[in-house]
Length: 234
Image (cartoon, rainbow, N blue to C red):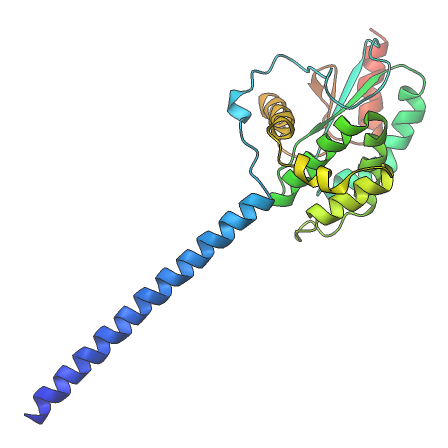
């Protein structure tokens, strides 16, 4: 009789443990989903990319420097979380600007290609909001965000940090409205258009540079200058 009671007790204990595990797993799953939902709300996935019809390097709505009538078009695809992009903008871009942009020899445009992490998307959205608010401030915003770039493995491109950087280059910026504009459909549409162009031309990483529609083998100053000079000499 005692053995039967012991057996029943063991079965009851086993069932209780099993039920407890199921409840715990269910709770963890629910919490995980809730956290994912909250994260998605703050760091949205770029949607609508497949709906974009790419028609060449259409840069009329892209941040652009220099002469739009120049026969040579240089396009940079970048991700604000990319450390190489930060180095490129610190070392290569100033020389490219001095040698070609300031002389009106090329038309230089920037296109977002956020791919590193979830806050890459938010940084790209922020750049579009800045560009829409004040086109002249876009390039200063880009410079500042690269200067304040942190480890690419960390989620540092937050609403507050991006708003602070934007405010530093646009003193009269309405920060509250800026944060709302990050999630507007029109802002998402602009970044989706950028990503669609990048996908269409097979961009795999950043920085990727195109000269008159052709990808440069590597983003070094020497390679870019060689590609530009070849086009100038045609």
